[in-house]
Image (cartoon, rainbow, N blue to C red; front, side, top):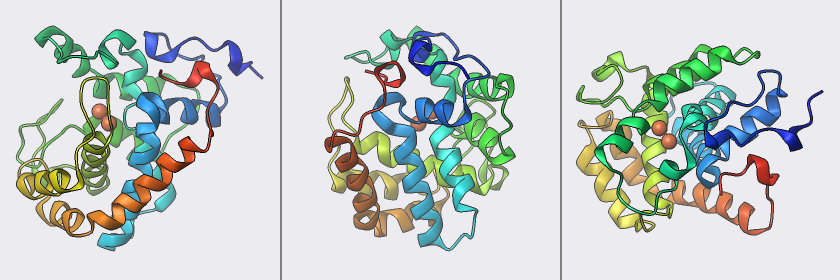
Length: 222
Ligand SMILES: [Fe+2]
Ligand SMILES: [Fe+2]
């Protein structure tokens, strides 16, 4: 079994070995950007429950954890830049959905179809102006629609090197504004209505980090 303590820095543009144990791969990816994937998984499972969609909770969780897999190949200087990105750097970021699909296919373990779709399609928008394919409306799979909303909620709430944490009110507003634009309208409005519930899920994970539960340094993004 490979020793994970000598795994290369994933977010420095180097892939982990394809034989890295399944659990370690998932942990490492879901912890990129301070646990973003992990929280997207948790939020997505709660949205699935609130909306009564009946999607498999384990698969939704995994799809959330691995949606940003492509970022293991995005340089740390870009991922953690403490300033707005240049157009060239934005172009690099926009490659991560396709790269994510590539990494998941290259990796020796099998992942469900839903996970592959989430990695490739989570930046599509309901109005068809997203990337990489420009899929529109119901052509975007339902589980990807859920991951997309959860992704935005965590990205807005999280403090990143280049931005402050948004207030819940600002997050609620963006969900309402983007209903039918970035997101499936009913799903976005449901999340706006139940934002307090989703915040509880989100805060519980942050508390987990504050309790000192840390992953090994070589699996942590900063
Ligand atoms: Fe992403
Ligand atoms: Fe994301």
